[in-house]
Every structure is written in structure tokens, then in C-alpha cells.
Image (cartoon, rainbow, N blue to C red; front, side, top):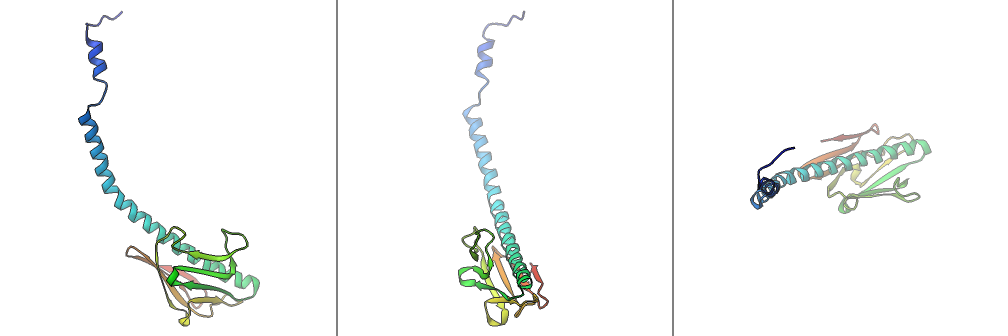
Amino acid sequence: MLIRPRGTDVACAARRAFTLIELVIVVMLLGMFAGVAAPRYTKALSGAQLETASKRLAADLRRARAVATQTASPCTIQFRPALKAYGSTDLPDPAQAGAPLDVRLTQDGFNLSMSVTDFDGLNMVTFDWRGDPVNTGSVTLGHGGATRIISVLATGEVEVAR
């Protein structure tokens, strides 16, 4: 059996808590770490949004080409840069059964800029029954200084460049 001197139990019990100063210091350090991490997190998130949007547009263009060859009929995607959107009545929306493709880059969680270059002065690309584009051009998506250029080449291939 251990014999403890009197008063040691009280001293040990009183020392088991943190002082107010220690808690304030820890909260201040956490605040500084959060202040450093938040801008980096925001930048990483915006980069991921740009990457996701460019991959989605490229996938939809490739799908339009595939549908044109499978159905042996033209398939068109219209771009609406003022609305930061694109869509097609020839393609079904994979997220909504029976609805035509309609992608709004502002509504789908993205806050991107969008510009369309060439496509013979039209804001659309059409793939013929062989999968060849009737007109070629590119769409530029941007966010926070970073850009992705999604191009439809004369061969019908879709290319994503930085």
C-alpha cells in the first residue's frame, strides 16, 4: 500500500486543466494557421473547378461526335458565352433523363469566364454523320488568371490545352 503525503491529491487535481493563457495562445495559433491555409485552399478549389469544367466540355464535345457517327446524323452543340453556358438539343443530359443537354457554368458550382473563338463566326460546332466537324474553333474557359482552351480540330479530335 502506498502512502501519500497530505495535500498531494489536491495539488494533482488542480494541475490537470489548461490555463486561460494556454487556451488563448492555442486559439491564436489555430487562427494564424487558418489564415495562411484559407487562400491556398481557395486557389486550389478554383483550379479544380476550371479543370472539371474543361474536362466536362471536352467530354460533351467527344460525346456529340460519337452520337453523330452512331446515329448517322448531324449533332450540334451551341455555346452561349454571355450566359457562360452551352447545350444541345441533339444530346440528352446525363444528369436529367429525357432532358436536352444544358450546362450553365455558373449554376453548376463554377464561376468561370467563357469565350468562343472562330467556329466560322458561329457560336456552335456541328459534327456530321462521319464525326467530322462542319466548323472548327475553340472555347476558352478561365478562372483567376488560369485558362484552359478546348479546341475542336479539323479531324474531329477534341484537345484541351493550358
